[in-house]
Amino acid sequence: MRVLTLVLALVLGLPTLPARAEVPRVQTDISPVAALVAQVMGDLGRPGLLLDKGGDEHDMQLRPSQRRDLAAATLLIWVGPELTPGLDQARAAAQVQSLALLDDPRTLRQDYAEGGLNPHAWLDPANAAIWIDLIAACLQALDPDHAATYRANAAAAQARIVTLDAALAAKLAPLKRPFVTYHDAYGYFARHYNLPYRGGLAAGDAAPPGAAQIARLHQDAASGAIRCAFPEAQHDPALIDSLAEGTGLFVGPPLDPVGSMLDPGPDAYDLLLTGLATALLACATADMP
Image (cartoon, rainbow, N blue to C red):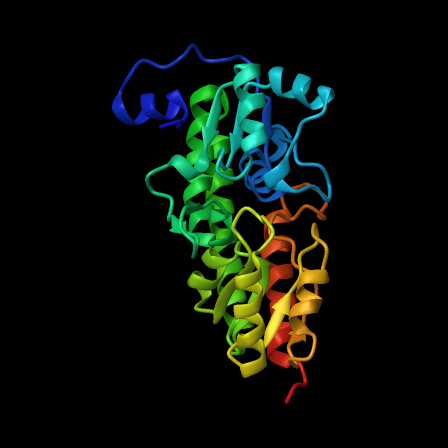
């Protein structure tokens, strides 16, 4: 397990590393993780974000300047190599302490329809709540002088998740039409809010779909078994458009599961999930036969 040694020390009573005098320098992989870390750090510091704006998490490659930032960091907080395999290589080369959030045994995990672990776990707010506590524990271990601040900030972040979750549940209640997406990234969100999600055209890692998959979904669209389809911000919408051609399938606005088009900051997690819900609701309100 790649969970940070400091967390194991806290849980198991093992000796911890010497406390650092300064606020930890934290790097993160994607916008929603950066937002959760920013909420816990508050005014004490601002985490770095390694995924470029508009970037593809599954094909993430660091520039030399980003590699230097990673090497200078106290801590990398990331989902894990299942989401960003390119970052795993850079992390190992930088020899930076890391916290892989997906590895925590409390994280609610889900497999793709085609098999294999789905790493898009931040799309379930219950996981965000679990990760906030984990992030706070790590920062307290590294920076005990500010432990009270991290605890207070984490409590505020937890309350924020509760409010967001309730608002999204009410917002998404009218969505009853079955839908598909460009790639199979939204199972956590759909499970949490009981949405009629029918998977993605592309595989979980956004690899192009095969002819059999396209043919099956086209048949489902023609029969009405799926009613809506959503492209994705980082990918060509041609596959979604071809699926809709001649079927009456409603094509919604592009989705952005990692918030790659958002400005980084503590509000990015709320904006990501709210924006996703708003986009999906286009399926509920679309005028279709």
